[in-house]
Length: 289
Image (cartoon, rainbow, N blue to C red; front, side):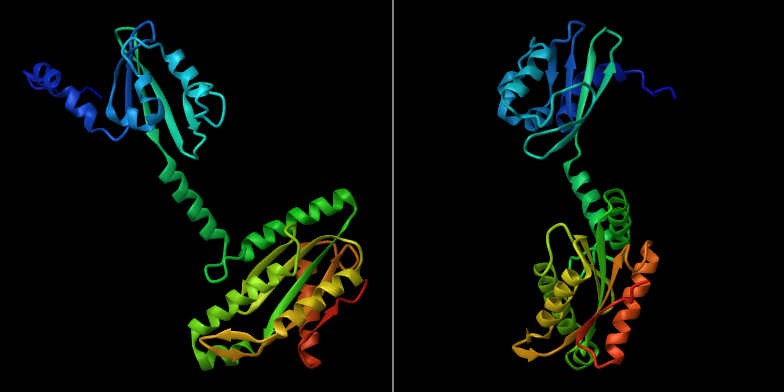
């Protein structure tokens, strides 16, 4: 598409160009045919603030890159146009465009806030808002990963299906705010009962799921399940009131009980309901095949 100019545009542009470049949010640097600096706007100097004094007319672009490296400003070695990761966590996108004079203009766009927003959106899509735990979708993804790893290593994993006993009554009596506080406390207690390599997720409502990786045998899993039941039977304090709930836990082990994610979840869920029907507040291992 052809640009539009008025008859006196060249003179007006020449007069106003420096101000326009200074008002841009992106960093702009113009280099001559020998790749030496001709112009750098304020936004660029701000991006490279610790070495702003190095951006002097006539300085070679290669020297500026070396200076940034010497000052350890970059997280990785500079390899050319594209995303540049700074040591302080910022991400800057550098683009190059040739000039008819033989020089080049380089633009630098700070993507840090954009990247943080992307990460926040991804986190919100994969984590439960109330507890901060992985949600059902992320739980299923991690279970698939664990199953593939266990198949390669010929190791065991366990799936725990946890349903809170008495939570609905408390939630109805005290309100959803209090219920959310309890769910958050439950999440904290569950995470404290497993290893960092395991996964605790909020499956939905008052249901939680756990992946225990690289377990030795069903007895070890049973001890973890029992400790979870004991932990969730302890009193909770909500709005200065002591609240008692409990937990019914069903357990299924790969490959002893099943070899697929769906089957493990179904068997753990079934074992959990068997606990509920037999009096609640306990755990049960799925029947061995």
